[in-house]
Length: 109
Image (cartoon, rainbow, N blue to C red; front, side, top):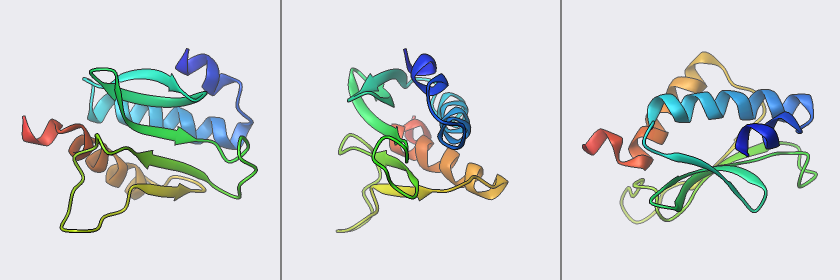
């Protein structure tokens, strides 16, 4: 379902969503792809950890990679839970991979 939803996206969103999908599957293979409010999402035990929100769906100037309260990203009393995406560089992909791994708790296993 997730790959079919990604395939329906306009090119700019589709390119980002495909890369995010690959990054998540590599960084946190234990997360299960699922649709969440019609968006590609990745869950642990049925609960969404992170999701991709296309720019087109919400008529926004950027797509978003968001994290739920299930994500293990706690850092003090305040931390980011969403990132705006316009394109992905190699450094961005590396950062996202590490972030997803941390969010999934994969680095604590």
